[in-house]
Image (cartoon, rainbow, N blue to C red; front, top):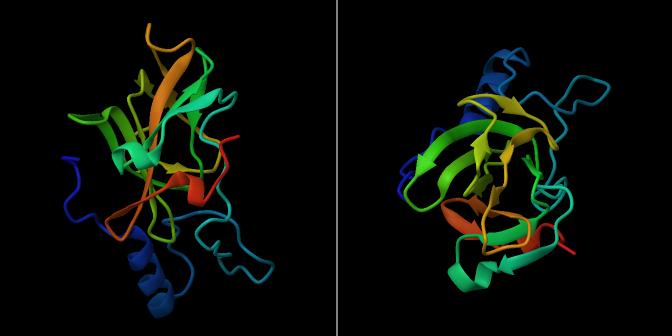
Length: 165
């Protein structure tokens, strides 16, 4: 993947800022408890399916080591699997039109081969927010897109944190 070098660690800066100055900086607006403290979700919890009406996984993570190709309904919208900040929104040589969302815990979700992108760089998104539209082709009955996860510059099998059944 051509985009990735060193990414700015929004979550780390937010944590440092809050330790030094308190809560006012909201790089990752989200769930807070009654005392106003951020509620953290461990990796593997809090992920939603990145599109409604998933038909099947057409290419698994084990086949390419970066992502899975998911087939869904032709008119499906690709949605954020978890809240965070959009750190990439544009065209990539490997992923086509793609969006990358950085989550508070440092994981990144990548959504590729999209037909349209409906978010902008540095937008804050919540789980379920629309990121773009699936691509349609003669290869699949419906639409399709690529979905991948990374943590610490290592790709993670999405099946380890969510179920695509």
